[in-house]
Image 1 (cartoon, helix red, strand yellow):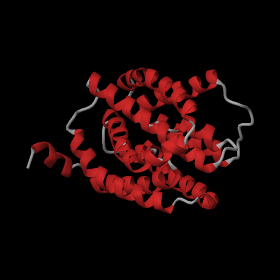
Image 2 (tube, one colour; image 1 turned 90 degrees about the horizontal axis):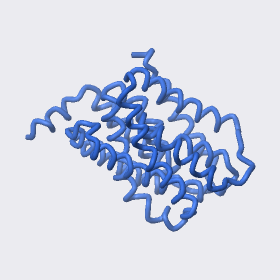
Image 3 (cartoon, rainbow, N blue to C red; image 1 turned 180 degrees about the vertical axis):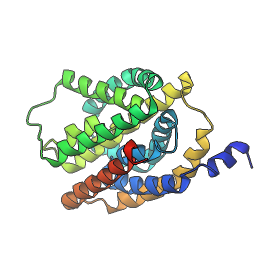
Image 4 (tube, rainbow, N blue to C red; image 1 turned 90 degrees about the vertical axis):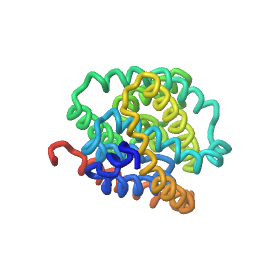
Length: 250
């Protein structure tokens, strides 16, 4: 057995990581988002933030195989391409900030961003305007910075989409494709820059199977008629992850 695999299997908290990624997969398959907001607050208790960012992006690519084909047919390709390009261009900035910042500070930032995202959605904030190209560039760029810095690829775009009055099916499709593009950009940037220990690939493999399995289950459960359940389930799991991931609880 390779030494790196032995180290991965002996990782403290591996059981919690498997359980958390399984729950995140259910939510991702059902809603199209939520993996990072569930997984990052927990994973940063056991892994360096650079490894968590890489792990989130790499497993996100795995789940894309289950969700992307249908989502691609349903998404707004013009809108998503603008968001994706802007995000890809700003990922390196986020990775640079991550390399400079203290891990505990980044954990607080991750929990804070997730908490604010959840609060904005639950309190019923709604976007009434029409988003032009400058707005899309700003949202995509912000998502790239935050994704590279903390592994939280979705909050900025999720706040916009869930706060909008768009059809829930379109919201889900757009979110899936955007997060897939951003995951690819993060993995590519990390591999080029050497920001993470590549032994983390073994953990990607160990978590990828349960994540893909529960993502498929969540996808099978998705029904636009169940929008209230769709939102409530995502909000509840995200809240639990935020509270459990607070550094003060270590």
